Length: 124
Image (cartoon, rainbow, N blue to C red; front, side, top):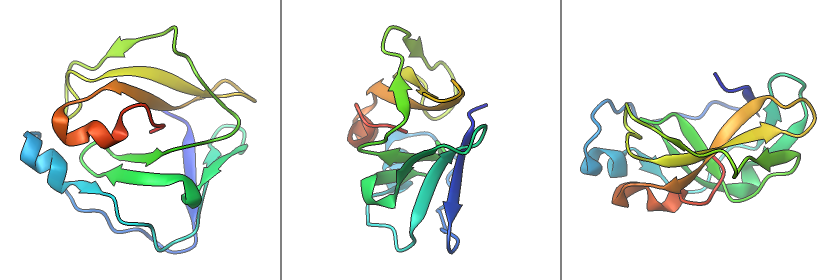
């Protein structure tokens, strides 16, 4: 379980998607700017990691918020994991950790199916 906490001023509504085919993955992708101001913090130590100005997309079936930048995180690019189940099956990721406490706060997608290429090399 990843320890990332998102604090927001008003709720975000996401589409609910359960299918994992490429067309569904694409429909579950939101790229329009967020209307809410968000601060993303490490859930374990509350270090501020990023905010909504770094928003790239959200993907409801993966339950991800993808950012183009963050501070106080480290991408463990020496650790590679291939996801074998769920909507992201076949994706290759590197874990992202909080620099202050070492908690896992996300993943950097290094390879993705065509419908998720916007997430590639970003922070999710």
